[in-house]
Image: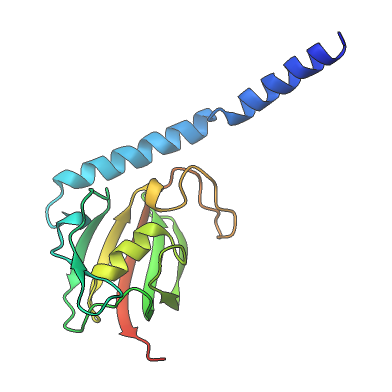
Length: 175
């Protein structure tokens, strides 16, 4: 029984240390949070929750956002088309980068406007855009990949990353 106690203590210590943020990760998190906080005072950049309403899957139903998202946007081109309805598929030109300008993804892809099919920040922005809109969207880490490193991008997306997407809603695809 005495042999198990030191092993248990060592295992507990290992689990505790592995859950701690490294100094690099902590530094990255702080820099990203400071970047997002500075957007509040930027000219021409608006909090996403200030939009009037969002059309939901029920025909014509609307709701007002009830909590601040922490997400910001800047309009580069004003579209004239309609907004997508949750559940529709849209085609989007996009470039994703970190606050330091490093590009981690770009392309022209189709996305389902559905919770859970894309990161939350991208989903929230798409609901509010009109066909033809081109926005720069600033997504805080909790609406992106959160506190976990995402290894399926090149370069990988570090934990606590604020994401910046230059995105243009090209079309709403017909079934």
